[in-house]
Amino acid sequence: MPRFLTILSSLLFSLMLAACTAAPEKPLRLGTNVWIGYEPFYLAREINALDQDKVRLIEYTSSLPVLHAFRNGLLDAAALTLDEALLLSQQLPDISVVAVLDISNGADALLSRPEFSDIRQLSGKTVAVENLATGGYLLLRALQQAGMSPNAVTIKAVSADNHEAALEAKDIAAVVSYDPQKTRMLANGAHNLFDSSQIPGEIVDVLVVRKHIQQQKPHMLRHLLKGWQIAHQYLQRNRREALVKMQPRQKLNAAQIEGALQQLSFPDKAQNQILLGQSGQLHKTLQRLRLHMQSSQLLSPSAATPLTLDPSWLQE
Image 1 (tube, one colour):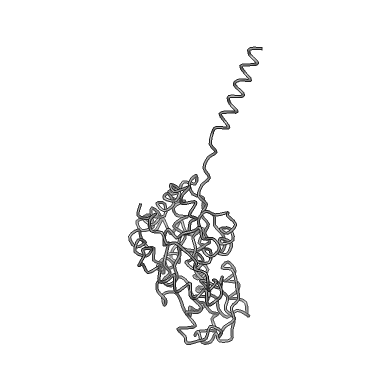
Image 2: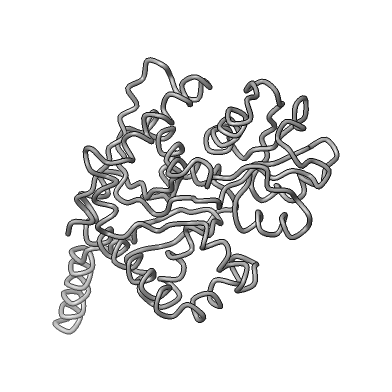
């Protein structure tokens, strides 16, 4: 009988100990789509600069599923274009931009079938865009600079992973796209009619994080930003090795990846401070995008659309 009581006591103690042991903290979940500008996150994981117990990278084929997953609470953070962040902020005010990841300087483009060599030839034709925000904005700016009406073309929504097939379809004259598919389409004869180098500083990618996650998992967010910085240092100092590591995911060769990277700028810590600051360029870009999206009825005209730009995380 004493032996039975001893075993029972040990069992009860083990159960109490298990109940008191805290469950392991879940990693911060970051969602991205396949885009050359987000590649440093995956490079950071490849070189062990990201601890998978602290940060989990979740990749989607295009930006629309990223937005859907974020809205449904499946992500804590997301790499998005600034206009996508604006769109989210209208529905989820509990978010803020904590870093500018990249600025497109030619990496986003209006590409046409080989038989078109001038934007004006697209009048009356159909143009495919991934969404009416980034794609629609670049298309609008292209039409403006060509002196054309926004209604000169018909817009068709096509996800980024289907852009190459769309450009081969006879009913699609052009597509607004980005790398890696942009490079492949150009290699197959597409014409670059307009790109983001003609509207410098207007196509921007940012890191969006839920505010309550910033409070609950600050160490994980700092780890993510540190990993991003380490990956950039690795990319600068070990260029050849970095390009090789990027090839399987981007499905481009090293020379093509190098060419794509040359059409992006990656703001460092100091540049981020300036961009995200109260008088920084990003506030002006944000206002321009807000007006465009409101006129396109993507945002409510009466909505204040509170999107916080928070440079504090990169000050630490």
